[in-house]
Length: 327
Image 1 (cartoon, rainbow, N blue to C red):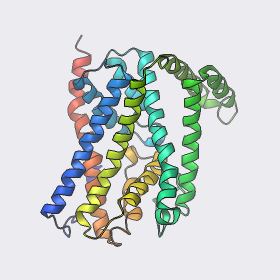
Image 2: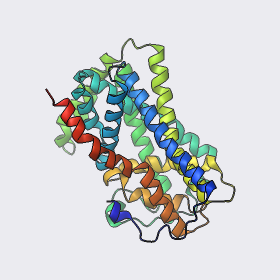
Image 3: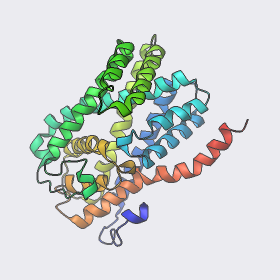
């Protein structure tokens, strides 16, 4: 994947200075902050059943799974449940932790996406886009109207997250009945067993979340917002490293929220391909329409925020398997 996405000579016209090195260091620091926040969250959600070492391994393997499984197929959702269960977190609690983690991510995007749209302005976010997608991606994304695609994905995800929230905090059994009824339709019948399993997971998770303390809610939500903010600030720092002119960092941040939501429906592992295309188009104004620089920085962004998890997974996975299956 790395070879396929690598453009020979991409960095030949990029000048690395002391100042740019500082910005790149800050981008790398955001990767660490992001993963530390995820580790804090997984420890809080499991009631500190995981040590820091185990939390690190679980998060790295979860990110590894998300990097090799398309976002449209749920990323590493099922894998994460398996990882926790093998760490001797009982199955019901594992389901609860991962389902609630998904809801927390949805809360962040659900709140920040419309906020980003109105703070930065729709014209600023979607101006001068000329995205040419490969044919297989055009089946999933409306390249003629990225704004329409964004809102379609946003409200679809929002509806599902609200359904999950209702199940977790109000009436999980009613949501299960709703899902089972909907998936009895002829078009959706082949997904009926999956819908029933999802309903069962929501009922289990709902029971696990009862009686949690205020500290539990605060740290889980706070760590979620810290991790996502750190994820988005990576691009802010990368672009700042090679763009001497004044940058509107709020607009840069808001554009990444748009990209993150659109990328949810990517059919490729880790959104590979689509993410790079979105980067070059959404940030071309900040890069003064320099396509060569955009290509180089898109690759640098993925080298910092995507490929390390693949390599980490390759290194950690055999050791994790050896440890959890030792007995």
